Amino acid sequence: MNLDLIVIETKKSKIKIIVIVILTILFIILFGILGMYYAKLYKEKNTQKVTKQMENIDLNNKDTNLNQQNVQPIEIEEQESKILLPEYTENAKSKMKNIYKANEKIAYLTFDDGPSQAVTPLILDLLKEENIKVTFFVLGNNVDKNPELLKREYLEGHYIANHGYSHNYSKLYVSAENVLSEYEKTEKSIQKAIGNNEYSSHLFRFPGGYSGGKYAKIKKDAGKLLNENNISYIDWNVLTGDAQGANTKEKIMENIQKYTNNKGSIVVLMHDASSKILTYETLRDVINCLKNKGYTFDNFYSIMQ
Ligand SMILES: [Zn+2]
Image (cartoon, rainbow, N blue to C red):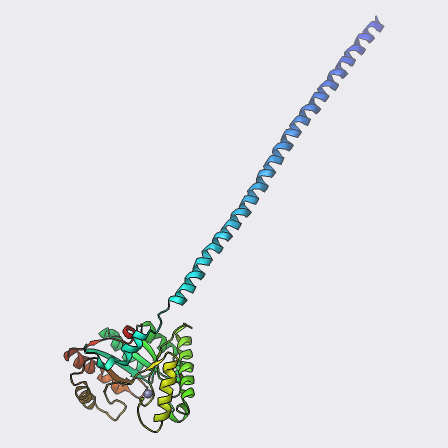
C-alpha cells in the first residue's frame, strides 16, 4: 500500500514537473515571441526616427537650398539695380548745358561752401517749411567735418553737388588734374557721409566760377577734363551777392530784382558757410520775391536723372 502510494505520489510529482517544464517552455516561447515582437517594433520605431531625422535633414537642406535660392535673386536684383542706376545721359548733359536758355520759369536755388553747423540746419528747416528742394555744392573738407548735415541734406531730397575739397585757389588750381582729384576726393567724402558708395553727383562748380581770373587757363583745361570724365560744371545766372559784399537784406533783395530781370530758368547763387547767417535771414524774402515773379522751385535731380 505504501509502495502504491509512493508510486502514485511519484507519478503526480512527475506530472507536476512535466507541467511546470511545459509551462516554462511555453513562457519562454511566449516571452521569446513577445521579445521578438517588441524588438521588431523598437527597430521599426528607430527606423522611423532615423528616417524622420533624415527627412528633417533633407528639409533643412531644402531650406538651405531655398535660402540659397532666395539669396540668389537678391544678388541678381542688386546686380540689376547696379546696372539700372541712372546714367548721366547725353540728353541730361545737354539740358544742363542749356539750362539758362530754358524759357520755363524755374528757380534752381543753390548753396555753396557748406555744410556748416551755424547756417545749414537753419536753411534746411526753412526749406522744409517751404517744401522747396535745392542743390548744395558742398566742400569735401566741410563734409568730412559735418557728415550728419550732409546726410540730412541728402535724405531731405536736396541735390548734393561738388564744389571741390579745399576751396583754396592756389592749391586747387595747380593743374586740371588736381581739380579732378579734388572732385574725386569730395565725391568719396559725400559717399561716406550718406553711406552710398555708388553716389555720383556728376556736377561740379568751380570755386570763384568757371570763367576768367588768374587761373582761367587751368580752369578751362579742367572743364574739358571733367567733361571727359562724365562730369558737368555749372556757374549761375543770378546772384544774391551774399559773398560779394551784399551785407544787408535790402542789398540782397536789390540783387535778386536786378539779376532775375524776367529770365526763364534761373540758377541762383547763395552760400551756407558758417559766416552766411544773413543768407538764411533773407532766404524767405528771396523765396517770396521769386514766387511773386512766377517762379516755381526745383533742384538738379530733375535734370541729372
Ligand atoms: Zn565757393
